[in-house]
Length: 326
Image (cartoon, rainbow, N blue to C red):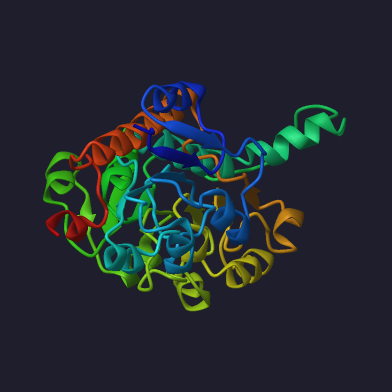
């Protein structure tokens, strides 16, 4: 009997590819770039399962091109805004993601951006590398204090809670806004649930960890930025479109807020012209989960989900459980 075929849209850890090959016929895009939608429709045609990245759009048109034999799309990410959930439900295709294993890495990365922005680390590093440093000076690269300041967290899920725990070592006051309260974090860490307006007005540091949905598109825009403190720092390690990039650029240029640390962007891999010219913003290329252990564990979850689905079992991390009931 022919083995089921799995297509992997971009190279992931070798351990994951090797595990897939024990069970299935596997094709991999070895080019270090995201496939276009048209390329994906051609290369994945006829596959029984697909491992995708957040750079891959999988909608009804793509699923139809792949064929009705496709049973599962395993997204190599915790977010899945690149997948058309409704189209998958309509066609009976199971969608999965990789939650949990990247919480530590993402939270650590977001807090790193917070600290690096506050203490102007990247700016100071460049100054030394450019040979401009001539000696210590008392007013040199004055940054922002982090200890005992107010940390605002938009989205107190697994990653937001992880950041809150890290913030306690800096004796920070923690406030948060979310669609629902998190009593555990409130009890354990003394976090205070507030509305969005209070979050914006009171945060010295505001870090974003909301999923990208129609309700959170441009969660931070011109109106929100104007409500923030002029000494505030914004950190985004969730999804780029959560922030109105044009409004953020203007706010940074006009010093409406003090600085920003950005891991994600509205139109990746494009970065809005002007952002990279500013000293009060740190920009890095969507690397929040980029640790070897995290990426290997993400691969394990994606592979295990495919093995389970193609053997007639339910996956561990299904994002459209409606399909499982059919």
